[in-house]
View 1 (tube, rainbow, N blue to C red):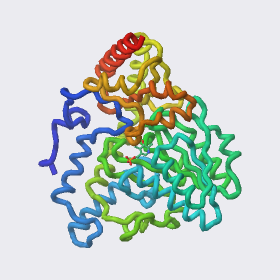
View 2: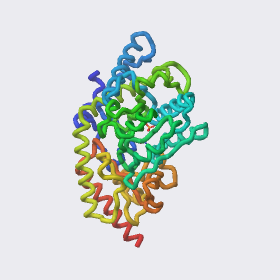
View 3: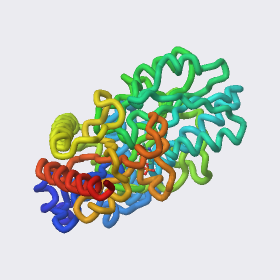
View 4: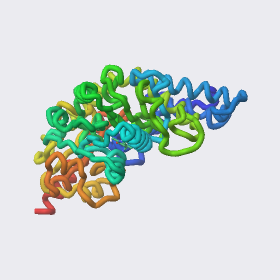
Length: 404
Ligand code: PMP
């Protein structure tokens, strides 16, 4: 296996190359680079050990062994059992599978009321929209200015025909963390299934499905330094054999998700989980300090901004900032050769509408349109943070002068 090693990557905590000629990357919520250690682990399964894990000959057996180990690692990271992990093509598919498959099951039990929030990712919101056209009533919980749902509202919204609640664990635009454990406990008490889209939370804050007592949980490889094109759905033991597929084909993944399992991607996700198990705690502290440094410098260099959402219940490396009197799109374009940040979710970046998350937390359209998302990650350095504040504040000060 040595022959595939990218030594240059391993020297620098898994960073594959120095991106010297590129703008500083501060959009880790949109995607993360694949860690070189992850890439190293994957390569043999593209080339030598390429068998179909569903074949019974030696090639297949080798691949199946690798998929099995990867499944165990994903399970271990979130405190699940490996037979509770379904590999999917990503979180979009995992969210669709989770919600649509449960909805079908619930309809058979006469439960056609579902609950979610207005700040979910599009893959959840659009699936609920589809379900609302197909016999379901959907209730959308409001969030406070802090970006948090109200547990009393949730209790009031659950009815006798409520079958499932789905609440995002940590928001991809504002980074606010919901009280998942309390939500799960309310759902359990009322005999309602609970799904959480934990794409942004897994690997950044502790996520343990047993402790949280969630029924279903979604994660995605490319948000955790794994490859793109793979995700996983955790489904609790009591539920997994009751679910039906939403696409049809073979009987892979417990008969719930047909299609050849992509061995190299599974191995990559497993390796990414292993790295997170040993590094995420320390990394969270590092990111938290970087975030504080960023904010304190920004305050002195360019006052006149607001951080959106709770500062306390927040992912360590996430910031959503509205700059008074600045158009966010123009700002991002002005600095695009030096600093890569975004206005919000990459999945809605072609939309000209202001972010639904920012409107839900009560920002008016003008303020929403002056908001940028800045997210730090594994390869963000203190020098980059200092440089980013310089770039951003110079541009903001300049733009304010021009507008005036
Ligand atoms: N949910 C959340 C919270 C996300 O941030 C994303 C990615 N933007 C997704 C789901 C979709 O993930 P994927 O790209 O793996 O389909």
